[in-house]
Amino acid sequence: MSVRALWIISHEKGENVSLRFARRFATVEHRAKILAGSSYTAVPEDNTVLQLLLTELGLSDPDKPFVALRDDCFYRQRSPALELRMDSPGKGMLWPVLAVSHGPITLACLPLVDAPAEPRPALASLLSVSQGLTLLAGLQTFLLGSGGKPDSEVLVSRLAMLPSVLLQVCPLGTPLDVPLPGAPSTPTVPTPAENQKQPAWKTGLHRGRAAVNVALIETVRSMQYGNRSRQDLWDVYGTVTCKCEVEGVLPNVMVTLTLPPNGSPLQDILVHPCVTSLDSSILTASSVDNFDGSAFSGPYKFPFSPPLEPFRLCSYTSQVPVPPILGSYQLKEEENQLRVSVTLKLHESVKNSFEYCEAHLPFFNRDQFGVVDVKVSSGQLDVSKEKNLLVWGLGQKFPKSREVTMEGKISFSGPTPGPTDPLCTELTAYIKLYFKVPDMTLSGCSVDQHSVQVYSSAKQRITTSRELQSKEYFIWNSTGSAPVSSGQMML
Image (tube, rainbow, N blue to C red):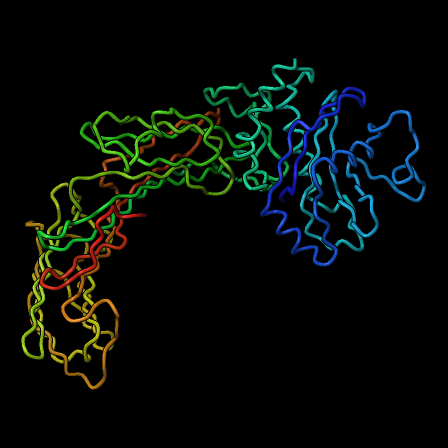
């Protein structure tokens, strides 16, 4: 369910009418145009919608009780799903416009209907109508409170908060939740789950034991050249994903990330809209600025009201002193063959326990492999002559020395040319590493079961995990040319 537009109107018995808030969602409107086809009616200007809506509600002219477009016996009113007809012929109509009035405030929205316009579907068959009314009811409670009569200052402050509230409960026009009743203007500690209201669109409920799963994944990239004239580059990008399975209303949750005493502060932190409050100092650290050691270094607390589906709670970058695997790659051409020399060394800070670890050595713009006489000190070597590719499987552990080597010669005398690449000509070549290390992160960032708090009286099964994995991890031949970036690696 999505909303094409939302309006909030204030009035006093049809007088002093003003449009207090309006929001349109362009992506939803684009979908509405595709679904409706030739019968599509665009949402007019807000002032036009205001006049049509006031007329339909009987608030535009109290002295004129009969309006043909509204009160004619041929017109069947289906309140609260109103039909707004454009003034001039051929301009179509907007339906169903949902409106909820309470005291001086009227809230209205135009939900997206994913059904043919003709014949018009029954209101009872449209899930978007009940979901839209639930959204309006939640916003009404947020603005007016449970008593329904807030003073003007409270209403103004909550209207000012509404754009940020909609970012959380209705991002891009798709409702995910309803705002908490009477939410204060400043974030507070998450409230117990019993105070939350289950939105109508959260129809799928988890059956079984309550469970919260938090997974921390760090991805490391590297460009190593083995040449003093070229600076090696590496970066670390971390994500925290969550999945909450709780029967009934989802409770509020707090996840805390911690760093070791000598850990480098997390930088470039981005959070999901469901995060209810955040220390502003968490967001100040940036990889663009020069690190001066004074940045916030944790613990990093993220209180949130989770959606039903798995989601990314936050992401970050981290500056680490060295890459996890240091490599040296040398190719030397001798007649119609290449001499290969490779050294890989696992840094002492990295856990020597891999889920997998492989090194791929492709050779481009040459004939197919002829004789491959290559030896490795550890692991297993697979040769693909069709792809001109060496796959060095290092297994799940480096040897005790944490260093492995490859030495040998490769001739190219196959009957057909091998694969081509416009970049890797002559001695421009690389090794690409693929690895995953469970139960560790390069930054030292961690999340454990005791750092996850669930604000609910029911018992939950809390599971946490962390891992380090590679992405675009290259070691270039130090005796040939290689692409070099003078700037920072961009994710």
